Length: 384
Image (cartoon, rainbow, N blue to C red; front, side, top):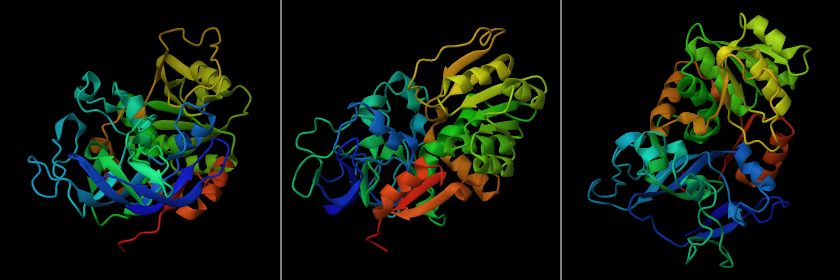
């Protein structure tokens, strides 16, 4: 099967939109999805800083959404159905051709953490989501000349017209919804909202400070507002602070004098929760100083520099933990976020700007320059 995809051939080069060839049919429990739209996430762009760890050339993209066009029948699901058990993942059994799906990260489904409804901490997370397809023989995805491409970025590789995915990481949604806009619910928005709703379990009377008002941080702000949590948002971009204020947070510039003290005053003595999306050690220390006793700081971004904690930051029961994918079961949280959006309480669509897939390099530049919060790429649909 031949279609177009955005290929990253080296860590320094731009994406090239070119013909690729999928050389396999869906296996049992797999879906072929025609991509309607796919978000561009910071993790996609971080491949350029991965120092050779991520296999290239590759088709990236891991916030895809689209329409199932092919499956392989298995006994549990009947004809033309994926037939995956619901289990702890909340995956609907029997996803079939024509269903609209949001794609999220992949997981094995059977390790201890997967069985404990924690698929983001799957024992095989790295191989399934970051390094998959490195040694496939024969390769399932090639360029037009037959050279292998890494095809399983977060189980999707959805910077393309089509993606072959495990049904485990597909969440069926109402076909009346604008499917081309829903892909970011599978990672970036899932991460920010999940940190607030799942990890922290924040609610009325709680206080939260969010460091970094990008896609993940603003999703956290929206989720906190929906939960009735008093929130302070910290960023260095005035336009992003304006967005945070629109979504219910008190804005605070990152260069404000005595930042921890100002946060403590705004949160009646200190925030119960802090969420850092920046991976900037100075801001992480500020966040810890701004916590009340027994407060918790969650980190969602990968650190690229040593983190030295200042004296006193972990005193009085304060703690730090890393949060992966918002501690989410996608099949549970994505429908919850869609319900909040339909009720006007999680307006994620206000963060999105769409681009044709062919303009992927412009989208990357705009994202890196802070001109857009969440780019969504629209491949040309072949079955309109």
